[in-house]
Image (tube, rainbow, N blue to C red; front, top):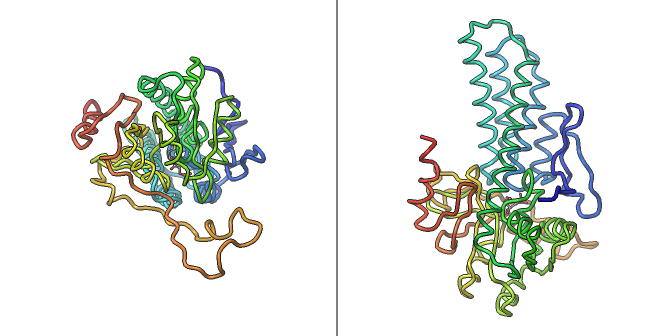
Length: 361
Ligand code: MRU
């Protein structure tokens, strides 16, 4: 696999930077994360976005933020850490990777505490603890990269050379550590001369498809055609789409999946046209503690994203009511298969998703 020109994260001389995705596609700017407020702001304003990338950014972000903890003993350090964790954990509600990654960092910290007790170590070293937290953030990033690569390999077994592929939102390399989730097989297939034709829904209102997917695929030399969201059915009817691939922000135990607003409509259309609909879900995005899609909290965002943002002048009457949910739930019945790093999962999801975690018991 060729190296990617795009790096969603950078670590330079002990400092953590994210690619500011709100600036794309005009400019590639990296933003240094220096505090808990910076990481909260970056996640809530979608400077870093996409479920796996949010998790990785939160892990590094909490490591950065622990620099501000000014205490001289371990219990006080844990107490301060937990406050920062709660704060960062509030930055966005739907992608489970945020809390998943913060939990991993907390577990790492508890492990360090247990080791200190075991070794009867009384000397408190913030520097040493922070080194270990950094190692955990690195591990989360590398595991995510490996998971995306594995999803690419599994996903590619479902696709054939020359296929037309429709995708919604951005679940590409910048939504993860590398390769993306549902775009990983597109990248891997491209290296192997599959010559896919990708159609990218623009993805209103924040245009992740237009600004991010079209940008990153074009940059990688992949055949990509941008369409408006309401054009998905015509490209399907024209016979141009052989598979739909999307990412996921939280997959419930019964296989209902939250993803970018508009995904469920695409899934319903795909079923109507007999086109397979594949949801790419690393195990870090599967939430077996959430029974069904109706139990997933859906983020609602400012209505100005619909009425004003992107336009030179307002495009709706002043004061009009808006409803701006950032995600919707695709019911399990519309999902042909769930692609994870551990393999492809088919219905019945309530039975088969659990099996993925059996070796962890
Ligand atoms: O609001 P966003 O841009 O964070 O929404 C992102 C999505 O819905 C992605 O499809 C999902 O996070 C999967 S990213 C690999």
